Amino acid sequence: MKRKTRMTVTSNRCLTDGIYSMTLQYPEGEMPEAVKPGQFAGIYTGNPAMLLPRPISICDWDPADRALRFVFRVAGAGTAELAAMKEGGQADMLGILGNGYDLSMLEGRKVLLLGGGIGIPPMLGLAKALHALPGTEVTAAMGYRDSHLFLTEELSAYSRLLIATEDGSVGTKGNVLDAVRDNEVMADAVCACGPMPMLRAVASYAKEKGIPAYISLEERMACGVGACLGCVTRTRDVDAHSHVRNARICTEGPVFKAEEVQIG
Amino acid sequence: MSADRTNSNVWTPIDTQPGPDMSVEIAGVTFKNPVMTASGTFGSGMEYSEFVDLNHLGAVVTKGVANVPWEGNPTPRVAEVYGGMLNAIGLQNPGIDVFIERDLAFLQQFDTKIIVNVCGHTEEEYLEVVERLADQPVDMLEINVSCPNVKQGAIQFGQDPKCLCEITEKIKKVAKQPVIMKLTPNVTDIAQMARAAEAGGADAISLINTLMGMKIDIEKRKFVLANKTGGLSGPAIKPIAVRMVWQAAQAVRIPIIGMGGIASYEDAVEFMLAGASAVAVGAMNFHDPYLTQKVVDGMEQYLYRHSYKTARELTGAVL
Image (cartoon, rainbow over all chains, first blue to last red; front, side, top):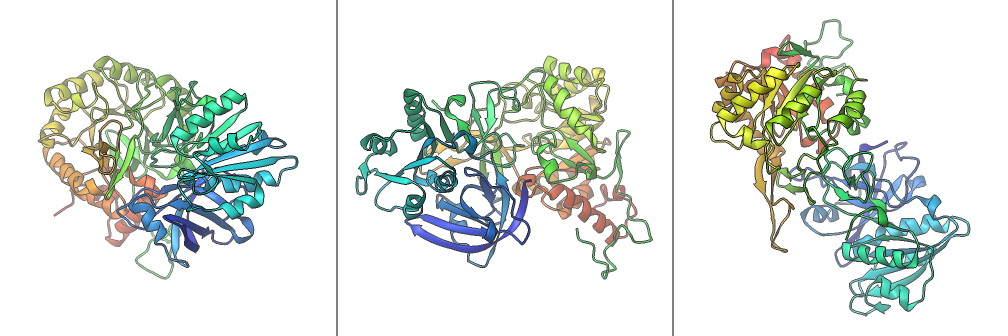
């Protein structure tokens, strides 16, 4: 059930250069029972001139504390307003949105998680969920610009963590796939979130290895609930909703099987 | 709206005296209240039915539907701007067959009126959809001759009074339901366009569609929308919309459905006072998915507070 909820900001702090971690708490009794890794929420800035919610992936959640954690990059005026929100304050949130990762497809496998930049945060929630599944091995290769790392401690608690940096200051110099090759990682499924060039590379990597890749896509959104058709992605097949080859990232996604979308 | 029993200025449904009559009539169709959804912002109601009880709305106005499926424009299709948003969806829709089978069937479950927005590239395409809907459970048709985001058709019919009058006449000949012509604000003289629709036999007009706009990303030196231009909606356009509704209301006798940036019941009342018989909530559904219901409740309280017996009395009541 999707709702717009007035949440309490229980923490909001800068992790590193331009990257913030914000925790929002549901009013008592309002936390949804099931949250899936890869799902997202729309957070409103509180500035009435900004009418659309900011779609931000859920990094982690804690039902006991009725809390959702978001880690986001300040990319413009809207996210700057989110970064300026004070602990103890309130934030309106539209959630929970999107399909998330299907854990049943990943259970018992050697799963490779690939995150690039601000695509890293949802991989923490996914690593945590997979870590709890029997017989599931999790390797996470995360790509950063430079030594301004974030979430590495938490990620290493739930996965074998490999790091790639563009400038080579930490881990493998290059991108996440360079780190995967350097470390001769063997996997039988890949989950990825990050910039489009990375996702394209991941899709061809998975194809070459003959393993499934589940990729999380991003697009400018308006409604977040599937009504406006703003955030579509081209798909291989005609889908049941659009009857043209346009799946809604907010509703059928954001997680898609790589071969089902045309991201080339 | 929460009922406050201690405040005598608030009417609650269990008060002994009857509440104000919220119903309005347009072209012989009675709506339980004047609050509708603006085409394209509410799908066919399915997505927002998770937030709003559609039974409480005057009407659901569907997203535009064409004779065949339309793919729409490439992405990015939407962009936020100060106090509003731009869109260039390009009228993506599943086509009339799927629409009838799935969307109309869904909407029929609710006790609300159904207004189907019809789009096309050519006269023939509009007429085909109108004919297909003739025997369907649809209360009214809204003809989209005002979308700024498709290259061919649509707005071309809505920017020339002669074309608008002619296509209205042709649609009226085949339509089995009352016809609303939806007007574009991207014209010099809205009164002239309103008169053209009336002359063509339109049963009502709705306005305004979006204003054509643009946004440029100065860091990338690129257009934000793949389509370069897009339609501006949201609170930023409301004063223009209110002015145009008022001008149209001075020019024609047919009823007007007013829209453009409605964000509250106060805005809705403003449109009614300017001359609208009903209103539609558009882009602000994206800001607040409960907004349509709040507008209904707020307008009811407004009528009570100002001792109006009916919502109909608001139409054109600006002094």
